[in-house]
Image 1 (cartoon, rainbow, N blue to C red):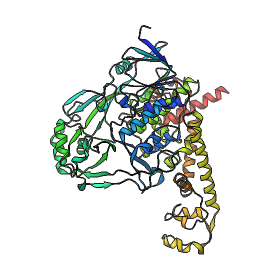
Image 2 (image 1 turned 45 degrees about the vertical axis):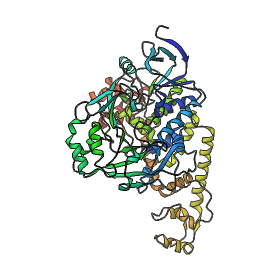
Image 3 (image 1 turned 30 degrees about the vertical axis):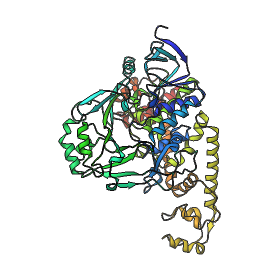
Length: 629
């Protein structure tokens, strides 16, 4: 063949082995498809070029959902964490979010080992420079490498992260590079642009890494992990290990003066960067400009692993020159003598407009081309992994002639993430947050397996062992809820106990479930008077408690979801020409024609489509239904 030499044929090819690529390739292989995973450098497999952690607010929910569906991120962080903390425990269970510090080198090695040992999955180092197409460039055929080697497949999944035309900025200096000093991907970016994909520039950044022995921890606040470790993966009932502390310190007026004096030397403010940065993870210079009245900002010192002296200065992302970085860091308590191992930098890269994708993450322009991760305009390892998993599943489903698997907003944070990207679009790197989920009381991290494991098992990524473990948990939780709702207690027998807990005595007999609903009590505390309690795992106990304690709120949200489902069930034909529908505003016609929403509900979430436009569509749908009769 004149465009290279054939090296192999696959069912699915995944380009890029970051968090999105790893999940996409593993899903495809676990679903029985011959899969190729390529990356520019094998050191980039599941690499953590930014913060050395998995999870966090909203993100922890995604990791639990990835795990429930049979993905690998939760399993891998449980193998490689060095500290674990449950966030937001002072608030309700809907926003409880698990976060774990990772040994980032070990995380990479363990994920690479998993990929290498997965049947049907080949991992190859090499740079993809071209996506090959056929049928007038409307259908994927495979990929070509920089060496002219060609690999053919009817499904290609792009998970390029921040490598596409990656460019590093440190002060006035800039140079072509991928993250962590790895080579950028330039030719592929040009190829995708030539194919007509709507690319744009986004930007993210990272702080400096320092040598831990150069820091004075006596001037910082120690941040220990939780005494009771909660696993990410539903396959683990409990975890034990000696944890490593993180440390907290703060900027001060001296820090802010140094940065303000050098605003013009920042790549961000000096006019060197054209890409749009993340709103919810600003650089320290951006924080000081935007929040000028704030006296101090937090800095978390996070170890990067057990076998390295590098620490990550969380909260201090910057694109200032190296000399200014060293000057302002040294004004912070505990960092007066720091030695910087790697300077902070900003990185700019090409990504696609996600509104050019369907809800299955397939390109609207090229059949068989799927996209996932930061290439889709998102930020974060967890958002990337979630998209990778769904792209892998949907790539296989397309190969098998099946319709796409689309999780809706009432089923999963993954559904919220993809719906937001594809339907609403984003003008900045997108980050998941609990506030984005309308039904977050039902989308808790403790019940992700209840919501998604049956789907993961049916599709293929989730193993039989995982499915059987889920069924066992489900049965035990249901049985325990029933027991608590039918086990009654006598007012006199529990009077002393209730007084000791600061809650009102009973005037008549009550069930254990009714006691759990009291603000002062929970499942754990009533163990003192619950003599018939069965042995439950922490996962099981948590879910039983939440289902009882918040039952009223849960029922209200279930009613809201019923209304949501009615709108989602009003399907819109994919061949409709919205320009021909009278009554729609021009902007609505253009947006609807471009996105081709699957349902009336999805159409209502498109920016630029008003309630009046939805009413027009309702009338149009009803008229068509009558005509069809």
